[in-house]
Length: 290
Figure 1 (cartoon, helix red, strand yellow):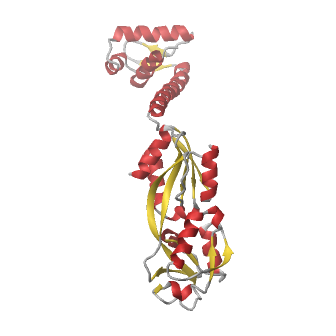
Figure 2 (spheres, rainbow, N blue to C red):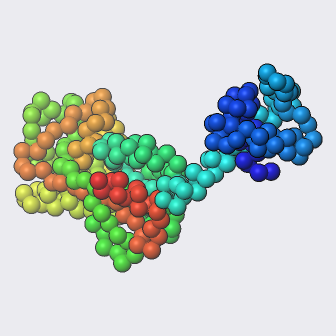
Figure 3 (cartoon, rainbow, N blue to C red):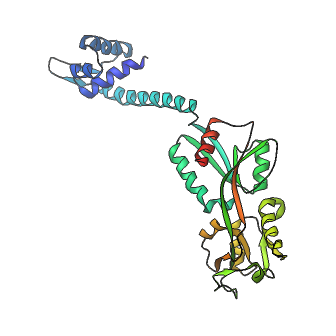
């Protein structure tokens, strides 16, 4: 069935007046009347009751009107979807991210991206840096948001943001009332750190920072996620160094402290495979770059 016939009928049904409907459609009234008659002949039912003064919908006409509106709307959606797909604004995107990114500007930019491109189906997966790199190489995710300076011929990286690190210590710690702490004040404390094999970039920055001041820290516990590390600190199992954005996680029993020394900084970067760039991924990367 020609969609134009549906459009003609819907317009007449809304106006219940052939002259007004013809005006809306920018056509003469006689051809419009002929088109409606052709539609009724095609369907084998009377859609409209006509006399010299009024036009009324029949019961089949009311049923057909409801379905015709749905069909026209679906056709409009199909055309819009095709146009958006051509522009890369519709599709699927799978993105991995480190847990510590959930407390910083990444989430705000992500919300903005979803509002700007509502037709892109985005799937988020919380993963360690190491897991994201493996998933990228295996083609399981389109992009990763991670803390790494990895050099790999198949992976391209783009820095998203950089932030200082802070100390997180138990509220019961003897130095909890101090405004700032020196590396020498806490170097003998037990530390909680992520395992190096899951995030060597962050691990090496922290260890190198203390070494640069002649301190060697004692790692007493290991945990993968930053929120888990903060929870362990609140239990009194040690202290930790975390990206500053993690301080938004206000867990009872802990306090966050700045270093006296210039704080080490860690990057948050986007990573993707050079040979697997889709239009949706380009929009994602450009949005974060902006």
